[in-house]
Image (cartoon, rainbow, N blue to C red; front, side, top):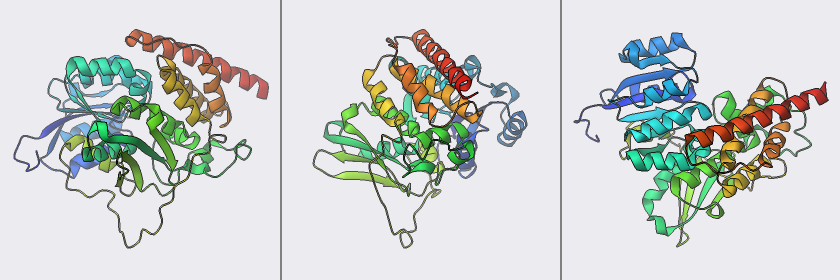
Length: 378
């Protein structure tokens, strides 16, 4: 598709009215003739969905407000004409769509990290059965995906994921006891949805990305590191066995990894995130503070435990983040609730029903913990 002479690549966008979805449509607008949108799924913003469908000529049957209905999302992901399914659904509800796309043999442009984290073994089997391909949309995993082109798998020494540090970088755990929702949503470099922005503030987002990197690239946890990089210019790095490190750099703009996921192995010709090297003066890196931000350590522990632990981590975190956004718990309680849920044995996950059960139990336990905290505060 590099010369534009082939037919347009046909795209389904799940979560089309959200942050990732709207930016994906920006990319498609900027590449006239290269893509054709054949499906749109949104949450509840029916007015914007209707406008998108009219603009891109998507028929009513394939422009649906699915909410978080997993069956409806899966049906959209199995679109018979799709070449690429972009899964920009927020949270665990994206798992059935991930499975449906992969089982259909379609390329999956994956922004919904939770589905891969919670159902890693199940997703791997779906990919094997259907032959579908995953190209990551997360900026960090896209950076690693690009860097890995520079060497063979056997030559990879370690993967390094970068974290901005969020709005609370440099603060101690004591300093963070009374932060507000507004404080936590004030991300210094990225504009994202509320859930992922809160995850960034706790560093849970980076922990989930560690598990995702393990699942995507088959690298063990001892060879996946996280460094805090406040400028958000270096998005990810691969260190090879000879000591060479290949990094991907760009200004923070999600349209760059989205464009790559839609076009790979080619690149698009719109320079999202291009750097003015005459103005960029400083790039800094530091170790994450695991005492102030224990969520990162919890994610490593869940990943190493395997089985249903990542699904339990994800489910408990979604409940805790929602409770914080609703004002029912404080920010510092988010990792405490997750840690409490992880103390219980999650078992293995061999199929979707196992994943769903682990998720259900973890969410129920997290809700109980939220209720206890509320009673204690009242």
